[in-house]
Length: 338
Image (cartoon, rainbow, N blue to C red; front, side, top):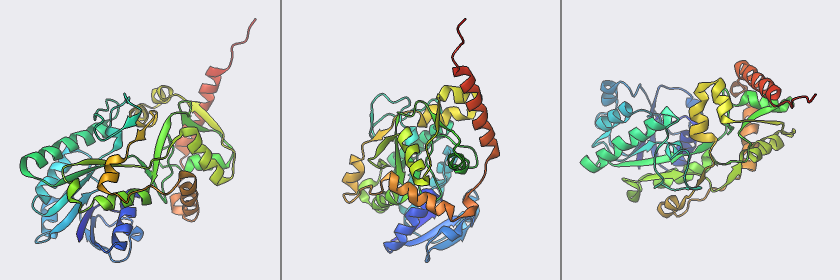
């Protein structure tokens, strides 16, 4: 079986690439040549910009793939391009959407694939919904063999699931925890959140590749383990062997200070999300998420500790955290009574 990945060196795609090669697939990656060190031996590499359609047509001339996966399509024009490029060139095209596309705020505690797709808070999610609509229309109208996969919060060797962090990633929050400083948790920390290890995600994803029953379908891939945010942070603190010093701030208060946080918080992480993985398990009967978070996060932190290039300080985020804590603490100080 032959597969072509567009991208392929991110948190989920790297894990999928490794499992796919282990299972004997012939895998080709098309990207700009970044992070090739993450890839398993035996992967074929094509260096190119997927946005250059003429060049990509030349690179792929005469080639056929059982499965093509675009890990880096985010907006409608990109999936329209993919339809032009890959129609008649594969048996299955997989689009990576997002579980953040599901209705926010949710009207039911349990999310299934039939949960409405609507997210008024986050442009990222709205764009993913629009991409899904275009691809499903192409499936209905011309038989374009699409499968839509909706990951939720997936972590791995260089990704730590937090309710909020700065532009440089999670390391500054880890530093604060190690230094005994308070870290921000959105809301009161009791909303339920689902995190999935990338290796577990990969088992479900590979099970959908080349699966004739997945054509024309949308499927989310998540763990069955849902935890309050407080517990997620406590697991991280336990893995670091430090005390969890959590400072709770509402999503509204954070978004008022930085409007860019509105989408990721109100449109995603401040809501409780519990997923029904029944559809995935019907399509991939062997699927099971086996890596418990308190175990998986220890592996992640160990990996990051051994890779200094992943330890990116973020002084801007540190300053923002200090300002929020200072201002919120002042606001919460009880008024003195005469």
